Amino acid sequence: MNGEFVVTPYGVTGDVDYDQLIEKFGTKRIDRTLLDRIGTYGPVHHMLRRDVFYSHRDLEWILNEYDKGNRFTLYTGRGPSGPIHLGHLMPWSFAKYLQDIFKVKLWFQLTDDEKFLYYDNLTLEETKKWGMENALDIIALGFDPKLTNLFLDTEYIKTMYPTAVRAAKKINFSTIKAVFGFDNSNNIGSIFFTSIQTVPCFLESIEQGRKVPCLIPCGIDQDPHFRITRDIAEGLGYYKPALIHAKLMPSLAGSEKMSTSSKTDTTIFTVDDKKTVKRKIMSAFTGGRVSVDEQRKLGGSPEICSVYQYQSYFFEPDDDKLKQLFEQCKSGKILCGECKGILFEKVWKFLENHQAKREAAKEIVDQFFVRD
Ligand code: TRP
Image (tube, rainbow, N blue to C red; front, side):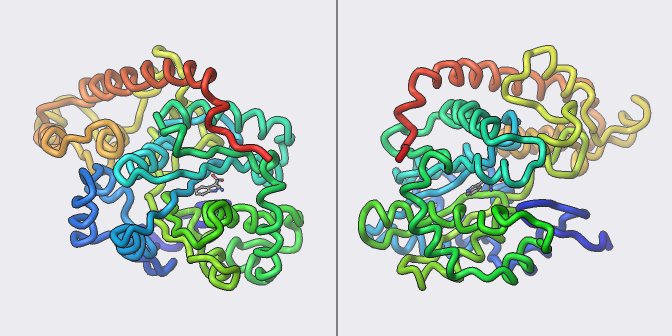
């Protein structure tokens, strides 16, 4: 088949088989029963219906506790190494959805330390600057300032450090090597870092002085960190964090994770102007045929089309409309140029609005930040 693939927070190689990843990581699939249960709290998000958020750990437990009146807290994060693209917004808008339907607090970690430690070409000043820039995109998504705590690791370290060292004492170097694929050449900060990503799972518990359940919406590539957290949580006197995992966002070039570091032309940044967005979408990889004639006759392949995937993951929440698009493509009724045009209109409408909110966020950013 497709052969080997490896998923860690620090690199994804090979063709990821997401079903197999569930087996490899030992997570659970979000099944029909669980989707129906989520539907009792609010609308079932299209990223759940379409298997974008497709895997979990202990989500039933989180809902059981919630039903008993024991509300959970949400935790997610961002490694600030550059500008934000559409793929980044996906899990965060999902976190916003969870905040909206459950009315719970969100802790949002900006790991300026992590990106400094892992990237040779970034200074700590730069990762912190990106953290503040990225915060604007996060706030622009509309999180409730009363229910959202954003923080930069280097600014919140005094609060986090006692828990970080307590966590670090329970983690062996051999575990780090095995989980992240590290060797003796990795710098010692990167070896320690997972204990810093662990702490926010417990920040609400620390603040309230009692055990509070925590749910982490994240890309499945982050799961290895939290496997370690789950192994040590109870020994530290907390609940194991629960997780809900997303598949990794494809780029406009096709399958692989939409990345800031790969070719910028296949990645749409939130600050791109209209012309740039248009150029990128118009040159996207599609499932089209070699000629118009052939496509009219044989139809296209939405299954492998990045334009269709953008509609499905992000821009067309209506299932009937998505199905219609799928069928029009399959039957050769719609050609790639037209389809790209439709996507462009939607993306630009979204981005124009996002950019205005991003500007407005500059005025309210302080309402979101917690500092030592
Ligand atoms: N390590 C993540 C990254 O590089 C950032 C992050 C920190 C995170 N805490 C998190 C992501 C919790 C998801 C959930 O992007």
